[in-house]
Image 1 (cartoon, one colour):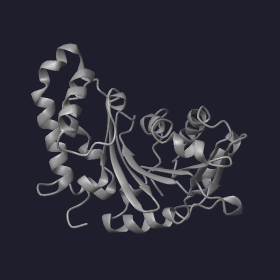
Image 2: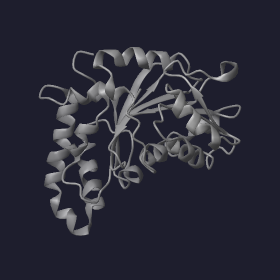
Image 3: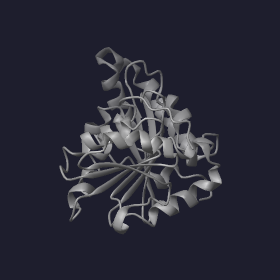
Length: 256
């Protein structure tokens, strides 16, 4: 069971990404897409917010909050409504009638696991995914200013996304302490993710003069430079949000 810290808007950055670049997965679903908030914590707030945000993409979306703690499930029950429900479970993702989720968002869940346990947890979810389904395994700080997540489909991990609040940002590598479990112990010399963060910091320093026009312009210039040597999967429309997505193959742990 996770510590359960849940603050309003804590996962807004990831929700914005699911409702943005990943919205096609919801729209392509032939029936009402099922989205799971796995390990939502002591309060059902994040599941309620997820349903509100994704309803703008697919009004018929079905959001299911899943928790391993019966007391947390009970706390969510009074908030159930059309398209939002809560149930007991874990990475096996128990759903009625063998339904397969289009998205499983698991935030701040695997951080308490050992790194070598991550692949097995991913595999459990991967087996349950709908066609074009996605597992989003991420971590963020207590109020959602810094977040990072790995996107995993049935074939394996696809990308790493970093999302940062521009206000007060000293350097992009500030997100390092919020890397997902699969990478957080790999932020050391010789590992690709360490070099990626170092390149971001170097570009950020070089573009310090852009600060005259604001942190957003500085981040845009930083991302544009980094794209010359790293396979970024997004562009300026996402960079403006303090968001950056890189192909997993470029940052995967060395030797994997």
